[in-house]
Structure formats: structure tokens, C-alpha cells
Amino acid sequence: MALVSAAAFATSGAFGKSLLVGGWSPGAVVTMRITLAALVLLGPALWSLRGRWPALRRNAWVVVGYGLTGVAGCQLAYFNAVTHLSVGVALLLEYLAPVLIVGWLWLRHRQAPRRLTVIGVAFAVAGLLLVLDVLGGGASVSPVGVLWGLGAAVCLVLYFLLADHVDDDVPPLALAGGGLAVGALSLGLAGLVGVLDMSRGAGRVPLGGVVVDWWVPVLVIALVAAAFAYVTGIAAVRMLGAKVASFVALTEVLFAVLFAWLVLAELPTTVQLLGGVLIVGGLVAVRADEARGGGTAGEETPLTQPCPIP
Image 1 (cartoon, rainbow, N blue to C red):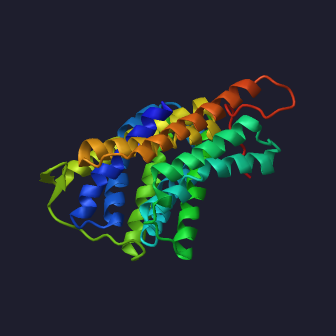
Image 2 (cartoon, rainbow, N blue to C red):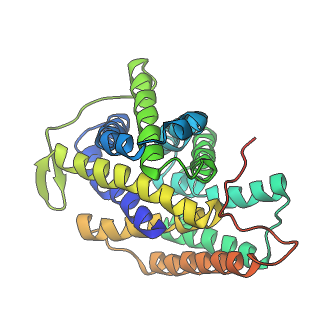
Image 3 (cartoon, one colour):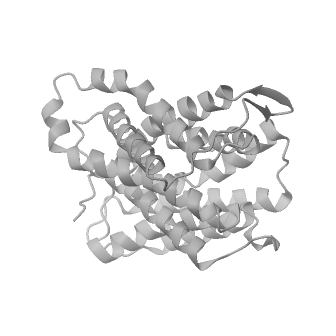
């Protein structure tokens, strides 16, 4: 489920790029994506809440926080980061989230990372460096961009922790639908007050060697990379816990490279493939560490239960 979610999220890069090339602003693209996804999930979310409205009221703050941070905040911070940084550096900063989650569990819950988790973190970060080609010499860095990138990482941490914290009585459809609705309203408000550029581009945009109407990539990034991706992502967090799910989410960069190859004919390099191997190795190490420590007294507890948020 986590891999399916990561693959779905990854489609936003290849299909969203066609809109950006066509002159659409990042703010307009992400707002259309989140708003349409919220509308699509409205009916299924209401249907899933039959007889469970008290559970939604109990978790209202979690849903609002999820929408403001994991949906709207993460998108705003990332797109502001890429205006000051290269895409590779911005993604690398955002995907420091698994490392931050390990640090959070250590500081807050005294769950010191064991050796396999430390090895997994090292492998995953090294793999990200190679896949994103941050060390290739073309990366640009600015202090403002770094702050925005770290803000995106913090929002991504909250995406996992809040999804893990919500009561099981709240269905993934309801949390995803409610979070997307809050995110859409927040992004719309940001556009109205001028914080977010909502410039429209061309009516027809290039996609995979052909020219298509603008709504074709919008449907893909809204239905697949938002609605479907958020629902499956929430379900995965509940089954794996925040830490393991966040590490599996790193495979999004691998799927992004794959879709760029299939849709945009951007071939991955040997170094990127090596980075992919390192990321997978890191995931295996972290998951093996969770499985090995699950029943051992005195060690960190598995993250299949809600993670308390102060």
C-alpha cells in the first residue's frame, strides 16, 4: 500500500511539469490538484462516515492540522523552496522527514535508534543524494530556500505523525477527504490574498511528445497523485506506523525517475540507479529493525499504535 501511494504521488512530477512548461504557475497547478481531489473524495468521505460522525468530531483538530500541514503547508513550502533552490536540493531537504521522525521518537519518546535503523538512514540519505544528483554540480542553494525546504520536511513529518495519530474509527477516506478540503480552502485563501501566484498558462500543453488540453494532466495529478495517493498513504501509515511508512515514501523519487523516463523520455543515469539500490537497502534495514525489535522488552515499541502529539 505504501509503495502504491508513493508511485501515485510520483506521477505529479511528470504530468505537472507539462503544465509548468505551458506557463501555469506552481500555485495554480497545486490548487487545482488539491481542490479537484477534495471534490472527488467529498461523496466517498461522507459515505464512509455513516454512523461515525462522533469519531470525526473527536478528531477534528487532527483533520484540520493534517490539511493545513500535510496537504497545504507541504505544498506551499516545497514550491517556495524550488523558487530559490534547484529541484534536487529542495526534494532532498523535504525528504529529510524520515530522519526527523527518528529524531523525534528519540527525543520525545526515548526510542533511541538501533544499529539497523542508523544504517538504513545512512543508506537512504546517500541514495537520495545520488538519485537527485545533488552532487552533480548543478545545484543552487540559498538560505531562504533552505528554510522553505526544511519547512516542507517538517510538514511532511506531520503528514505521517498525524495520519498515525488519528483514531481508527475515522476511515482513511474521511481523513483524506477532510484534509484535502482544508488544504484546498487554505490554498484558495493564499491565492486570494496574493501569497500564492495563481497565473494561468496555455490551454494546450506538451506531454510525452504530443500536445494535449490542459485538463488532461490536471485530471491525472488530481485523481491519481492526490485523491488516490492520500487515501492509500493514510492506510499505509496505519498499517506500518509513521517511521517505516516515511522511509517507504522515499521510493517516490525512484518512481518519479521512472515516470519521467516513460512519459518525458528522460532516461535515468547509472548513478541514479545505484542511488535507487541504496534507498531500497535503507528501507529493508529499517523494516528489518522494526520486525526484530517488535517483541523485545526494553526496546522501542512498534509504531502500529497512534503516536501522541503534544
